[in-house]
Structures are given as C-alpha cells and as structure tokens.
Length: 129
Image 1 (spheres, rainbow, N blue to C red):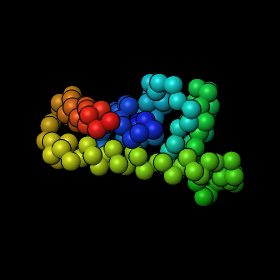
Image 2: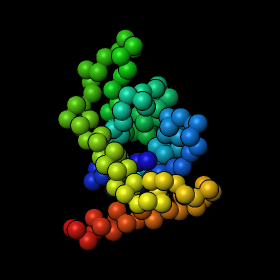
Image 3: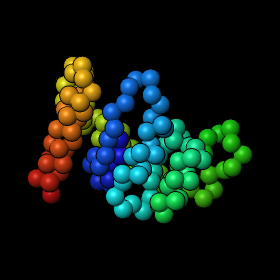
C-alpha cells in the first residue's frame, strides 16, 4: 500500500501470502503520481528499488540494513518519522470486518472491499476538512 503525505491510500496491490512485499514495490512506484520523496522501512532496502526511485527523480528515504557497509548518513530522519502513516492507514482499513478477516475467497472481491474501505477513508477526511 502506498499512502500520501496525509496518510490516505494512494495505491494498493493485493498479493498472496507467500509473496514478498518488495516484489510488488516496483509496480507501485511506477504508478505513483508526482512525489518528492518515498519513505519506506528497512524491509524495502534494495538497490533495485533505490535505482528505480532515483530514476523517477524522487528522493529515497529508506534506511540501510545493519549488515551493509554503507551507512545512513544522508537519510532525512525527520521525514523518516512519517513512515507510521502507512501503519495508520492499515489500522483504519482493518476496522472494517470484511477486510480484517478476509471472508472473500476471490482476489477481485477482496480487492473491491479494500477499495471501498479506502474510499471511506478519503470520504471521511474530505468531510472532516
């Protein structure tokens, strides 16, 4: 899932339980609208993702893993603190029972339910503002 700077879902992709999240990130990065920075956690630290992000002309705020020789000197730590917005979006979406328990057997049905939950988030924020 990709969220904007307000924590609202911008893009999402449903995968199987055996698929690593990093394998879907290049597709999600390609679908993104104009962005100035991409914030992710250590799980998305790979040279493939970093190269794609810089090719798009976006700054990558991804900490390096501990076992790498390169350090995190150039990372913007203030911007990295906003990574919790993705977790907050998942928490909001999982308040809907159909999403939290995944009653749907088909991917398209579950994807539709997640889209409806994301739409409710957008609607709630639009009414709140």
